[in-house]
Image (cartoon, rainbow, N blue to C red; front, side):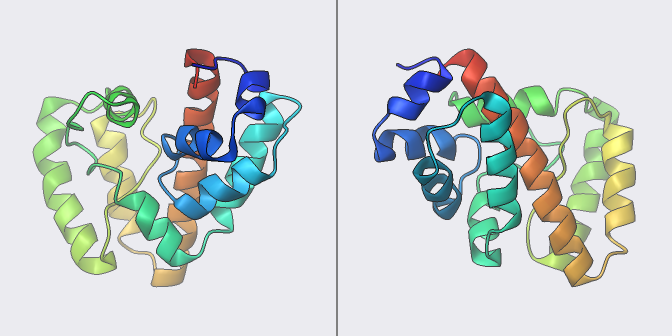
Amino acid sequence: MPDTLSDFNARSPAGAEEALLACCASRAFAAKVAALRPYDDVDELAATAEAAVRDLGWDDVMEALRAHPRIGERAAGDGRQASWSRQEQSGVEEEARQALAAGNKQYEDRFGHVYLVCATGLTGAQLLARLRERLGNDEESERAAVRGELAAITALRLRKLMKEGT
């Protein structure tokens, strides 16, 4: 499999989209970012991906959210997305999981989708504090927050993808 940016740039459109879907599970995102190849460097690819996520329609954001486990839950499976999710949430302490489960339910009841936050480097307490803070958002503010978090997660995952190989 390709393992460099030049190999990613040379992939077929379908092959590039498949690799991108591991970073953000929106087909619209993958199609757009794949169509804008070639990229000169990983920074350009990450910036393009972040902008593409921020421009997604809400239905496309919801498609991407369906691939994310709840914060505090261990992602099942052995695929790349599940492995990355487990790494990203590695700072969640066992004692925070119960509070996060209750917070996730409250969030989902309020907004109708999974609470998404870029968990890399955050403790369970920090994730819970952010969740509680975001529960005070109105719908428009929360959608902007979700897009920002999804963009950050996508950029991190793209950088991992280019290091691990696509």
